[in-house]
Image (spheres, rainbow, N blue to C red):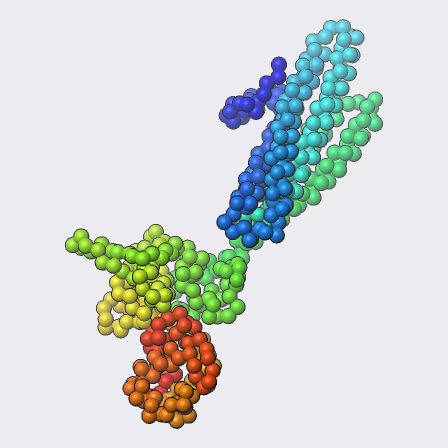
Length: 468
């Protein structure tokens, strides 16, 4: 009696496969493995075809759609049919063998023995068909692993391994079944063995490819180890350490980010040091924080009130929130400030109450907040890069007002410039925001470094780049 096992629940089918029955047997199990692989591949193809970033797959979208259609309309239905066909055919073969074993007449035994062998030949054809489809699935899985959604490569590798397992199973089934034949069927068995040898050669080739896919994932993690170890060393060196060298900490972090930039930015990898000064990216892609931007963030006070904050970090939950109420340069400075907390401080939750766009003074309050502001300034405006940018514009590392420099401000005199800049801070702020000097237009220093003119001016002063 034919039974449609694929109409049963998964649990029923698994119980049936493990019940010691002849059917569904090993051939059906191989077909089932192929069916699972087919569905896994189809899932990844579907995820890729419907990706929110279609431009990433534009180069192979035709192959993706063709493979999905081929699997759903041809390969999977064929494997489902072979699953049932193998179960039905092996039931016939086993029944014939049983008749043979129970026969009492020599003629009947002879007839039933030969008939059982003929039925076994049909049983051998089926795993060849399953093997062909499984090999095709394995080849498609290799394409999917290389070209489709990278985050679904686990699915792709499971599909590839499953297809190869089905293929290996078919090879074993065929080799086992040919052992039932004697010398009178040598030509037949030799042809079968020659064919299965070719299948096994293909299996070995595909297995080598599958091993390489696993190695790719292994190597990708190995490549991250220097970054992970570097972060661990950085935290051990500076986290919770009083009076640590904050500027050296930012340099160590910048060097670590620069040396591992191709891991952190797989696309649009930074080509110069200025491009790595992205606190949001480092929080997310290096330290594993979620970083959210919203119009309003509040922190509860002791009297059941709420105070609005520029930023907050929740270290246990790996969360940073930045308020977008303030200008972009304030948001950037706040993000760098929260990055400082993530590296320097052990407090579970910290918030930046005031939307400063520059480092506060040490006497202003909490030393933790002062340290975070200093870190932000050092990180966003590194000494060497600031000096290089300053020199490119002003052709000096010690700018002072004289008739020559004043004239480059559109023909001003030194007296004019002194009247406009009454102290060193005002001069530094003017230089920080300047976009035209000596007849040349350029992006201002403050915009180049993504900070306010005031923050840039303070850094210029700290580095001794102005003489007033």
